Structure formats: C-alpha cells, structure tokens
Length: 122
Image (cartoon, one colour):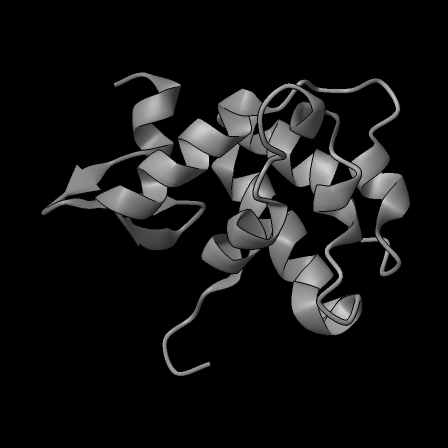
C-alpha cells in the first residue's frame, strides 16, 4: 500500500482525510479547488485575512496530498479565530485578493475551510 492510500482509504463512498470521514463530493471539491491554486510566493489570500488564518498554507497542504496537516491547520484556525464569516464579518478578504480571480474565479477559500472543519452537531 502506498502512502496516499493510507490517507485516502475509500470505504463505502467515504474518504478518510486526516482521520476525518468525508463523502466523495466534498473530497472532489477539495481536490479541484486546491489544484486551481497558483501557489503564490507571497500569497495575498493569507496577507489579506484579518484573522491570520493562512489559507495558502491549508491549500498548499491539500495540493501536496497532506490531508492530515490541512485538517489540523484548518481546525487550529477555526478554534483560534472562529468561522470565516465571523472572523472577517463575511467580507471574504482572502477570496477577493486571490490572484486566480484575475484568470477566471478565485479559489473558494471559505468553502474549503468549512469542509475541513465541519463536524456533526456544530
């Protein structure tokens, strides 16, 4: 078994990312959004975030198939600064500053963080 399968074990249409169960749709959304990131040297999304969440670091972990670290980073940001819409009063500064938006549309950073930090009953 290779290293990727240890993190992406598929069982009954669920993926386990960083110890977290995720349905196929959310898995595909995360992979697609992360693959669109331009991996900026000085990411404007991270510098624009008033809560210092570092969305570029989370997306980079997803791009490198390091789901365990991506989940840990997202959960740490969630517990220190709260949900994205609360942290910046739903202004989404990170998405507005995303360079990818000049090509087609910005990375859906808020959605990525919501998927990674979703827990039943929260």
